[in-house]
Image (cartoon, rainbow, N blue to C red; front, side, top):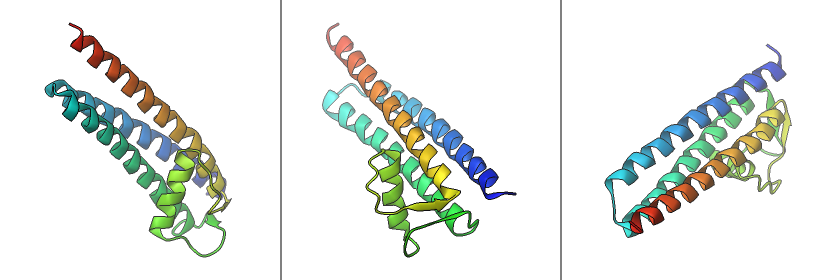
Length: 144
């Protein structure tokens, strides 16, 4: 298989995997929220749950970057081989579209990184919309 084909397949795995995981996480936090009615416990719990989901998704991207770089060798990063912490940090930068350019991907790995940014922004926006709707529902239930 060509490097580009492998990169596209890894990108699809990342998008599908993070989207399904995110859906399940938001459904899980909805179930959690339906059983708790104390706002001082509920709101921080929901926010922590959503942030944890994003951290797991970022870790998934870091793993995919490592797989593309080391075992599959379809790309690399500028400089020395990044540590797992470097990859997690880089994945968080790209997932959030912060992009500090600490690491620079090369080869077919660039496609995964570029699409990962789009995927991350969409998942972050989804969480923002979810939290907004959650706050609206809480406010509506308090006004009853």
